[in-house]
Length: 290
Image (cartoon, rainbow, N blue to C red; front, side):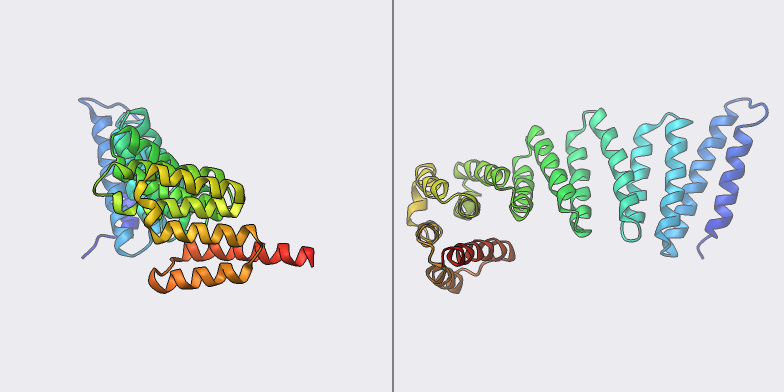
């Protein structure tokens, strides 16, 4: 049977009080602080069993505070804050983000970029879940750079793509294009990733179409030089066809080309959102001139 978390909290508080008063011999204070950490941790675990994430997170934070301020154990503090993050995540995402950010800062100060990147990715996913796309994008981009600095290219590319997707949805097309083209260039020389080059270039091309038709046409030619095989792909032909439709303001032709492509290669929600935005822009321009 699980212990009573409130009773454990009471014992932990008493341990803290006794450590801060009177005389301590033979390392008594340290032992009391360590005991308090153990009791707060046990209380947090008991709260988690009861599915009380907020109280569990608070108890973990108390343990982490002692590890940092009284025991000078910042590594243990960071690990405990990760447990606090897990406890807060479903019930108090803002608190979850706060404690995980503190742990990430510690890993960065130690030069542990791989671990910082992993936790930053979790933070990005949390922000995405609560639909804070601005913070999610920034976290994905930071994590991607840290993975790249740690020679974890595959992990970095995955997150650059996530950052690019979010940037494009926010209509910040320049950085989105940079992320997609960066990953495409990495993939061209990688046999395991090469098959996906056409998808990355299509994403970049769609962002060009959404922002600048002249830049889009120029980009297609550059992509053919980057990857000679791209010219023979359905993705390249789609970009050419869509560019012509945008250039001539032909919303129906645009929709028809998309329909035919989608019949063989179903478009995911990101592409659907982006391409519908472009189609609506063509129709809006037509209305302006009618």
